[in-house]
Length: 121
Picture (cartoon, rainbow, N blue to C red):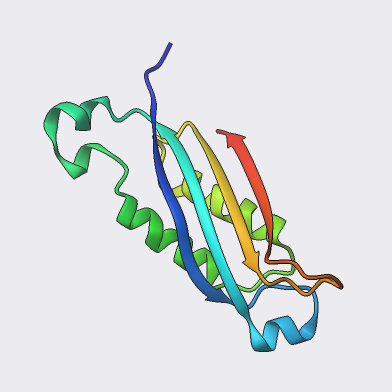
């Protein structure tokens, strides 16, 4: 069995323009993204070198790029983040991504709406 551990980023914050309603694409909203990737970091544990791991600063930049492209649904945004992670990092075995929209436009008070996708490669 392969060894793999996890790297997580919690509450990356963005202002983005996702949503079904035209007004959401104009006004935008606050979003957060939390993710965990599962990969083998055993080499980095010994070498203490960022080249031997998945650099979480680079992951944050990748998520920022995905968040900058408006989509209708949080489901699509989360899916695109997972696909981008797998595309850019061949060592990732699995990923869990949660995309949260703050103050979503729903007919009752609601602080946030979230979608979580967990996927194996």
